[in-house]
Amino acid sequence: MATYTHGHHESVLRSHRWRTAENSAAYLLGHLAPGLAVLDVGCGPGTITADLAQLVAPGRVTAVDVSEAVLDEARRAAGLANVEFALADVHALDFPDDSFDVVHAHQVLQHVGDPVAALREMRRVCRPGGIVAARDSDYAAMTWYPEVPELDAWLALYREVAQHNGGEPDAGRRLHAWARRAGFREVTGSASVWCFATGEDRTWWSGMWAERITHSAIAGQALAAGYPQEELDRISEGWRKWGAVEDGWFSVLHGEVLCRP
Picture 1 (tube, rainbow, N blue to C red):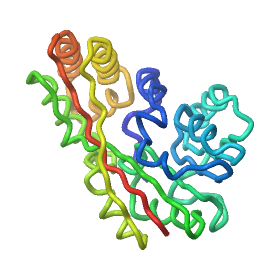
Picture 2: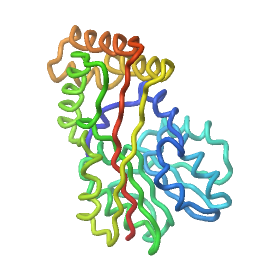
Picture 3: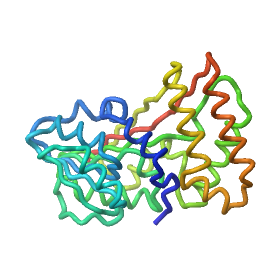
């Protein structure tokens, strides 16, 4: 098991609530149809889950996460009759073989101790002819303008902390290889981006990270690793400085895979 680097501070959940099936699972949507049974692994506050449930209704979505607190929020937010929630670890899913038509994981495999084993477990619960879908960001491939030294420091800090926790922050580029190692007979890789370039987007993205680097679980882990509070404060201010630049632009690259058992 790896430590979840981000934790569940409000600043983290605020970014998770922004996610929808359209902006975070577009590569999967053409493969969904009414009546399918879907497992949403690492569902977080459930915004993607709710979209998936509407797309496959009257089929059912089972959404799982390792945090009971975040599942409680997801239950309140979903409000759909065809969604159920449960605690689960992706390395040992408590479901019989061949239980789901689609098994989906967004921003999960970068945080687990053994992503290949996790994909094997997702494959186990996926029915023959079904799809396992995974999407993860790739931190080393993130890019921005203008150059702000504090953001370089942020990226180096995050990658160090995530790797210390047993995760792989550059998971996006590895998904295709991991899926092949997990034994899938057919793996289709793709990529897509989030881009934050409008004034509203820059304010939201920069403010969220400015708060996360000083208040979320990342802050505590960085302090434990020897980073001084002054460095976290400097990085936080750098995020706000970037967000105030009229020509500011930030791109987050994601790797994606659609896998057939």
